[in-house]
Image 1 (cartoon, each protein chain N blue to C red):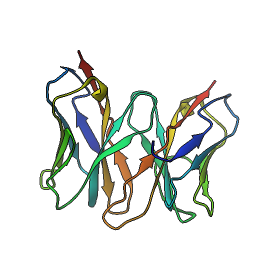
Image 2 (tube, chains in turn orange, yellow):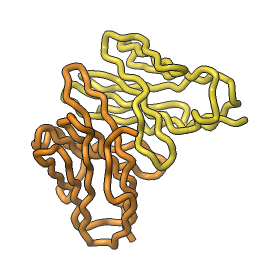
Image 3 (cartoon, rainbow over the protein chains, first blue to last red):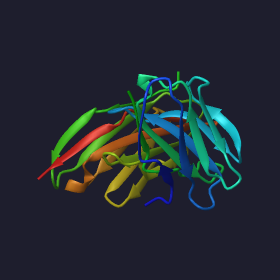
Length: 114
Length: 111
């Protein structure tokens, strides 16, 4: 196990609702990244937080937002849910190093939008 | 446009056989390349990470190669086991720490 936890494991919402997904980083990690993975596809980068500041964002609309807390845990918020938001949402924590940091992924939250 | 392309899309091999998965990328500037293994319904697990100056890196039966000139990488699995059945994802990190994932190769190992 990676030491990264996510909650909830599964979630069902209806179109138009809002959802908050949570991620607890591995101890000592100061960076967290969120990804959306559709069935049969590779993960798509949503955004990354480094020391509580957003540090890079993928091609996702503003209704996808996030937070990183002083203990480096993180939230992903999605407003006005759409059917296409149904996916596995992964968070990955790491400790920023020059030359690359190894990301440790959580098990993911499976979101279904009806 | 920064892209990571993997081939084949899926692969079936017999237990005990070797296989090689390919990854081509157009990411620039390049920081590092990683290979991940993702079991169904689980988060990806890091296998190898290589920077620009590294040509090969091994992790047990997994050996990754990197040719930064041609922007190609491969993951070689030796003496496959049933537990190797998973998706293998190639990931390239650019100079701004942006992460670009390939779509993955789905490997099936049969007894």
